[in-house]
Length: 562
Image 1 (tube, rainbow, N blue to C red):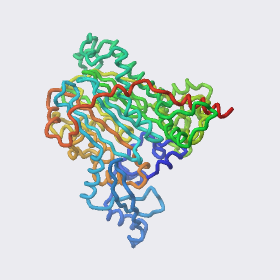
Image 2 (cartoon, helix red, strand yellow):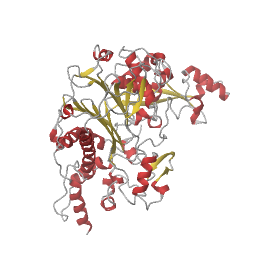
Image 3 (spheres, rainbow, N blue to C red):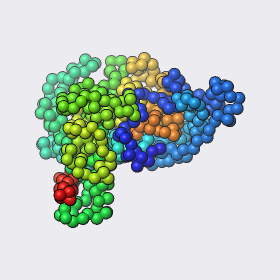
Image 4 (tube, one colour):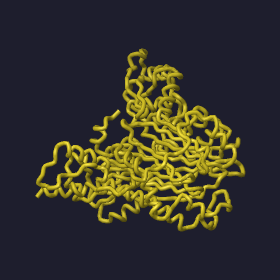
């Protein structure tokens, strides 16, 4: 597994450098040929015999290499496991098998999937939110994903999922402060926890099921919340870019030297800006749902047709990547004097992923200061502070923190749950597949009617594609398990892969279940692993105005250059 230092010195940002966007893999890509990637991996003995036979070698032991490696399943747990890799001339034909029997694999997988998981039941709350399942499995060490959730009132909740890159520092700061920033921006616009309860209904929203019984809220309320969410993103980003979290000021005069400790603290503190984070926010206020996204994490609504019980997946966010036609058009319009193939193109080390300035595979995010700072700022900062200089930076900013926001009025009895996942999930599962997994999870608990899931014309319990739907108490963990292949051999193969970045990513998932007054109450009883009975309140002090240290440092550095 790559060290932090090695990742930071890589040529391109640490966002799937070896894995094309959109590839869904149930098996390790570097260990199985594409012709067998949809098949169940062979048993260890079968793999050895077949490989030896195909090479004409009668000595299995001569072609088997034992490789030891450490699996960091999450930031909380590490276990030592072994793999046996068959030596071949073609790397794509290698077969990686986790040592041990099925029970060993089962225990290993369960420990990894549950080490950083939680369930919150809001059983005594008036909120439309009934239950929140969260889970996280790391790939990087340390993991660059973060998440947060908080209550703004008894009927108002905010959920945040963050996919960090080029380090975890930006995501860490955002996870700590973002709920407070959102609350602050709402309150200065006159929002209160009771605002949504006193709205004047408008016309009915579009519904794929033809329902016309759910009114839209007052348009001014929608505008207030949308503007507040956008302002929170932009203020959070500006504080990061201007060094509000550096935590150390330069000497008052450029004639004075800064101590080694001060310089080291400055360089370290600036990592909050040079790293980045894709941010996905869901704000649930009574029965109003707002989803804001800057990045390629995804929010997926699982909605049930009350007429026949079938489920539909509705994306409530858009993947903000430079290969998205709308994002591409925006970027080209904002940089008319730059060569298109340099502005949006392929990096030589990854000829399949479209990247912005041939560097980063996203177009919206918090942080990523090296793609946003003015050229003068980039040039005057020392190399130790800026980590690594990015070529082809001519007319920044290239990445924006401005989110795209979608709204939906939650329809009780139809809208059953919201999935929020980083691309570690959505690169592996389609939105319809993710909804089908959670549908099946609910089916195993009797929380939804027994019907065929029309997304793939089968019973959810038929273990389609090898899915395992009845092992996990946590719906988010169930999603991650099935994103990794479902069955124990496939999951262990990906969790225990010696080069995890080749086959998977840090993965963070939240599943927010909504009340509907029906069988969903079965999700609220007899649940083990419940961590809380309410969401934490917000510390409003985290949103207070902050000192911007970077301009002070720039001024000091300019004086040193005179």
